[in-house]
Every structure is written in structure tokens, then in C-alpha cells.
Image 1 (tube, helix red, strand yellow):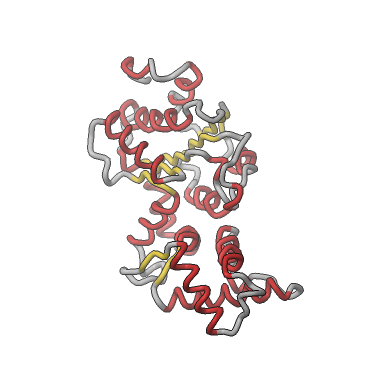
Image 2 (cartoon, rainbow, N blue to C red):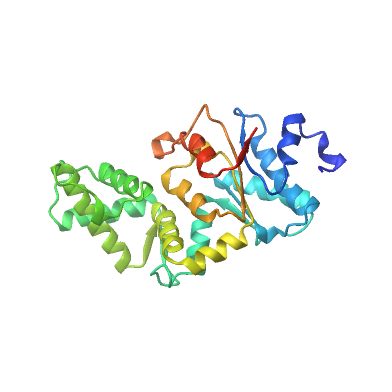
Length: 278
């Protein structure tokens, strides 16, 4: 149970959510500003302090560095122990951590570099110029958006279907050139972090088994903001021996421009059965 010193922080429904049986998959639905992240943080405290799980058993994922840092600060205060090595962070930071641990298995060099958005756009413009692709017809910002969208939908260059659409065919060509350039120069962009970590787990059963067994509890904040690749990362890490605890607001998604799919809230009830909804 929650310690008496914390009860004043949580209302009845929040306490109910935090105190769910540890072997329960759960989806906690609540509106903006209603304490969803507070519930997720206290759930971790409950698992570690009341149910004796180790901090290494926990994977907690959120969407912004600010939210991740706030979660770490609160957890450090609640647990009263160092949590530096705990797997708490954004989807991108978690994917980055996995790739840093297993670069060879992901077909990367150990010192691979991360591309930010500006780096990515510069490379795309250079490749377009070198291959005589008219930027007036194919604005590089739209090409960059196309590439990131394909990655977030888990579509590799070789499977982009541009056979009946000239513009899509040209975008796919640039996408292919860009991916080959990144591979040759040991570069990974933000969307690539997610896609490469997913492909690594999907294609390496021993690694997938390791992480499924390691993360006995997977907690996801703002679940309505997950896009396809993020949802699939959570799904592939889940098996019958670990448990999902997601909090979200099924009335809103602030990242729809970035491929977020609020319908993932509905999918979770089918993909993670049995699941308790509060």
C-alpha cells in the first residue's frame, strides 16, 4: 500500500491506480492536468518499496526531456536512493541507450553520431544538389518530413511504393540516398534511433528475450502521443511475463503533427489483454 506520508498527494482514483496488483496490465485514462504523471511516478515507488522490485526491473518512458527529468527528481526523492542507472527517459533516449550498448548488433560503429534536425536537412540538401534534384520542385523541408514520416511508419526505402506517383518516387530516391549516406558515415537521426532499436530487437531473439525478462514493468506516460514505431517498441518489449502500465488522455494528442495516433489508446485494450482500465 501507499505509505501514509504520501496519501495526501493522491485522490481515491489515483490511489486505486497506484495500488493495482503488480501482475496487472493497466490503462489509466485522465484529462490534462489531472495528475497522470504523478500516478505513474508513485506506481514505480509502490513497485520498488512495497513489492520489492529492483529499480533495474523498471522501464519508464515519457515524451520530453523536461518530463523525464522531473520524473527522475521525484523518484529520487521518493525512493531515497541513487537512480542514475534506472531506465527512465524519452523514447529516443531509451532507444539511444539500447543502441549504445549493442552497436555491432545494430550494424553501427560504437562511436556513431546523432544527427539533429539541422544536420539532417543539410545532408538532404547536399544529396539533392549532388543528384541534380530540383529543390524548387522538391522543397527539402518536405523531403525531410517525408523521410521522417516513413521511418515513424516503419517503412524502409526499399519498400516505399512510388510506382504510380512521380513525386513519391523521387522522395523515395532521396530517402534511399540519405539512408546509404548515414550508414556509410556512421550517422543516426532521431527517427532512426527508434527504427534501428526496434529492428535490432525484432531481428535478434536473444536480445529481445533479455530485455523482455529484464523489464518486468513497463510504464508509459502520455500514451496518446505515441506514434506507430513507439507503440511497436512497447509492444515488442511486452510478453506474458512482464506488465504494462500506461497513462493517457483519450481526448487529446498534442503530437498529431508528428504521427501520434490517439487510436493507440483503443488498440492497447486488444494488444495487452487482459488489461484493467481506470
